[in-house]
Length: 270
Image 1 (spheres, rainbow, N blue to C red):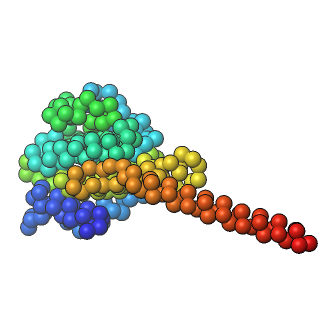
Image 2: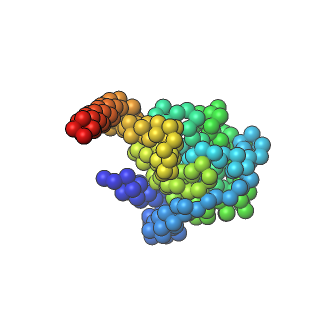
């Protein structure tokens, strides 16, 4: 099944998990999906957030590398904790494949009334993400949340005891532009890592610099192993590409030798 199809299926499962598919639903899955996907390409603003330790955090401080934005609310007892645990495992595996400092993560509480810095800190401690320097945990004012959630296409609505919401993780590029949406609280690893791999190794930009060529090789040779559930470097691809390059060089050398031989023969006859 294609990764995008997996993502759509995960979105619907996410709605079922939060109980939003019901006669009294306030969120339509099809409309929410359309809104979420329509946000791709949108550049997020430089919003003022509040870290879990009470310090200010501008969203622009997280630019310069891809950002994984996870939206939760701290009083959630089902999909938000499950999704955070899934994301924590996936982030650890992605960092092993792409590099520890290759991307950042932001968990943002969207319940402006209750997601205080103290509660966000407790959430981070509960899920063992509080000591990660590249994983920020933050909250924001209602005005900031309204603007930011609209830019990333996130849908939610108040419900008895909490919120009905899309189980959505948003991947932003280094410029803060929405690049891909990941749906569900138990998504397959490649759904998160493949778009990160594209951004980290820069395959979306046409460049022939040595660094770009090395990153292109890393992109091609970093492959997912479904048996182990991890990404690994396929050195066989490296060797195959090296053998192919050597073959081309050898062929070019033979052609040049033949051409020079023919030129010398023509001069001798003249």
